[in-house]
Every structure is written in structure tokens, then in C-alpha cells.
Image (cartoon, rainbow, N blue to C red; front, side, top):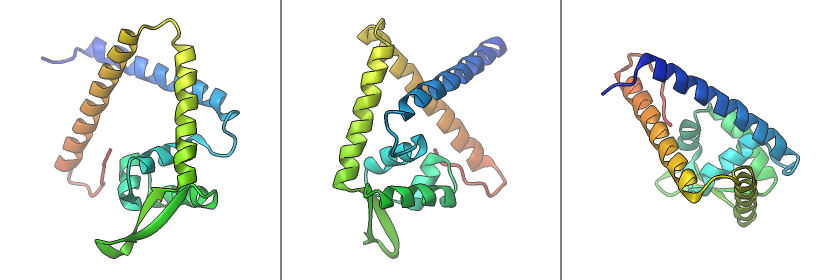
Length: 161
């Protein structure tokens, strides 16, 4: 079973439309959370999933170490992220959210969730669950394909999503 060319093209267009729409939603949200940009909020979300090394976070986020380093510095400066030595490797450090960072992350998530519920007021719970399932399936398929392509690649590019 394979996706047809026209269907794939339509899906690409829908994904691009969703990206543009999400940028508009994010732009509307930025005025409500002036102390952190969207990228730093995304970094906080991943750090909030559990303690991790910066290299692992950079790979998961698909960003370079210097880009992540700038976000981490911003988050540390605001007291949202803390570092501690990695017990498995004394040269490395683990990143985690501080108590204030956990509170701020919950605040972001509550704001986003509330805003999304407002935007989707005409959706049923079933609609939202179906969309969640389809987006998870799409994301998993794309990540798996990227990993498989990277594993078979002869370049030294490291892709991790």
C-alpha cells in the first residue's frame, strides 16, 4: 500500500498550511509570554521531559549545539534551567528544569491548552483525539523515515528527531 502522488502533494500543502497557521497562533501568543521566545519554550518542554545532556537535546530538537547553548544560557539566566554533573561521565553535564522552570512550563502549557480549546470550540473530543492520533502517526512515520535514510546515508550528517 502506497500513498499516491496527488495525495502526497495535497498532504504536503496541508502540512505547509498548518505550519503557516501555527506561526500565526504563536505570533498571537507571544504578546502573552513576553519573557521567553517560542524556541526557548520548546527547549523547556524537552528539558521538562527529564534530565538530559545538551547534545541529546540538540539532536532531538534538530538544532546545532551553539543554537541550543544560546537558549540554555537564556533559560539559566532567568532561573528556569539548572545543570549538574553527569554521574556517568564527569566531563558532561545534565540539564533539568528548576522549580521555577517547572512552574513556568506548566504555565505555558496551560495557556496553550486554553487557547487551543478556544480555537477549537466547535470540535468534539473525538475530533481532537482523531487529530492527535493522525498527527502522532504522521510524526512517527516521518521520524522513522528520516532515521532510516540517515542510517543508510554515506554522509556524516547526524539526524535525530
